[in-house]
Amino acid sequence: MTIPAPAPPTRYIARPEGRVAYDLRGSGPLLVLVPGMGELRSSYRFLVPALVAAGYSVASTDLRGHGDSDTTFSSYGDVETAGDVHALIAQLGGSAVIVGNSLAAGSAVIVAAEHPGQVDGLVLIGPFVRNPPSNAFTRAMFRTMMAPPWVATVWKGYLPTLYAGRKPEDFEEYRAAVVASLKRKPYGKAFSLTTRQTDHDPAEAKLGSVTAPTMVIMGEKDPDFKDPASEARFIGDALQAEVVMVAEAGHYPQAQQPAVTSDAVLRFLTTVQHA
Image (cartoon, rainbow, N blue to C red; front, side, top):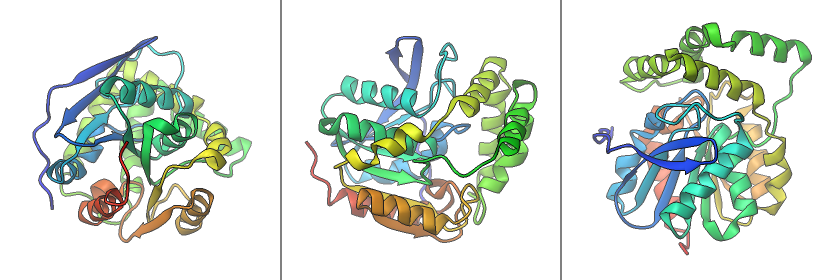
């Protein structure tokens, strides 16, 4: 397993209602790594060293209202995250390959569709690019579970299920960091708002406009999808993307199976023409 590198200093990009945190390592073509809701940018802690060693500049971000980002934002979700990613790439200059997990995959699709000159390629991991089937009762139950007073406790119990299959060796340490972050009152509220406001319809509407080369990486045991392989095929067909199914991985292949994931990403990157 690749050993995570020491964390570099936290940097910030100013947005209209607050700051979004990121860090930057390496030199070379730019990669922007964006985690899913409830996660920290250290979700990519095993992938980053391999990308830096291969000669890339790697910017890892926190979502707004998560980690080291501010909680002063009034809105959260795919569109808002897409705006943050677009602004970060513009600040760092040139163009980038966006690696997006979960919610961030939908955001990456929006950026690629709306700013094709900024996006050299997409790596979509455990991607939500459309809303899953649900009913009013399920949505109401989820909203109740994710209410601010107990969201940290609920997420602590729920997180292991998302890591179906092999868990990283440092899972308990990482989960403790995630829970500690959410226990900060403004961050629990921001995460709750993210769960309530996120809508993947804008991403689905943009699928037909994406021209960037794309790779879809899906854990074979991803519990967020009734049929992970079928969802991966749908996205692969929509984006003319290569699909990589990762054994013994749930929603976070980049942490659960980092060697398999990094090998796939690095292979994809060799096919990408950077602007």
